[in-house]
Image: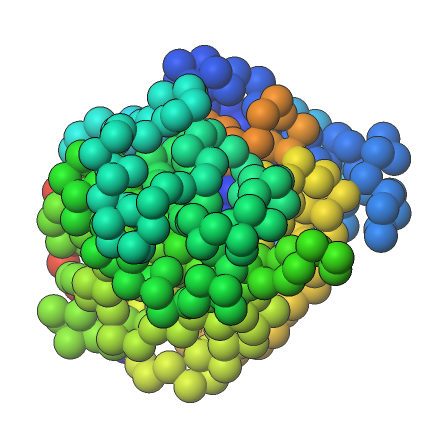
Length: 400
């Protein structure tokens, strides 16, 4: 039986979304603008020249970007030897759950709840619940913010007072940052776990634990112990269909959190994208026939997209591409390897939030040719077709 490896490069969009203007993102293009900056010499910190991702380009990445937005792709111009295209999202969001759920067959059937860009941002009853659960008399932050700056701003006061740092973004999230040693990691996870049902009832997509370490002198750094407490998908996803068909389902990265553990047999969280890639390579050797391996590489988004670090994003793409041959070497006859993304996060764009974009779809083991423009759900339908398992009513396979 064939195996399927569905690999999400978190936030690696390619522009061209028809409804981007509805999100304030018309003209955004994560990959396109990184390629442009590299070609113009504006991304030479730790690297040099045009973006070099020859392995993904051979599968069709450059062609997918051009098809999505019509932008030129200097440095990505080879004739593809894989199956390639770009996907459009229909869910009314540009966030992690929306993208992942929809690509596995479940477009989000409701409008997410978003917190206003005011200070305070959170309802008084939610703040009171956080305080009661944490055993504190107040919170810090209570606003829209990017994670690293708000930790730097409030960490010293958090350590002194014990008050958690609570913030949100343009996504439907409630994030809580605390010092692992002064507040306690398990205490943070217990707080987020207990708070999540109230926020999920409001259709807030995720409560995210954001632990950090450090001190005022040496600086503060977020740790790898992030945990997302997400709403459970409202109906079966590809993970459930595969599991119910007797296939083993592996998650690598934050996939297990995104799906609230549903349909997952083996979850590996790791400590950074390098460890996640090592695990994925190992699974190409070890995963049994018929397995579904679903992975997410989050650092494109968290370390470079949200930080608006163009050169860092380019370095991360080039690092990932250098390791792609390790995955290809582990493929068995009949296996399918899909590279895609869940949304955009254009590091040249205004603000620090995700951007509404099409996403590339490049495939090894699916033949050679152009998919064209497809739906997010077509990705899951194609994976299900290769696995030989049922799928929901959304999506159709693009496999030849």
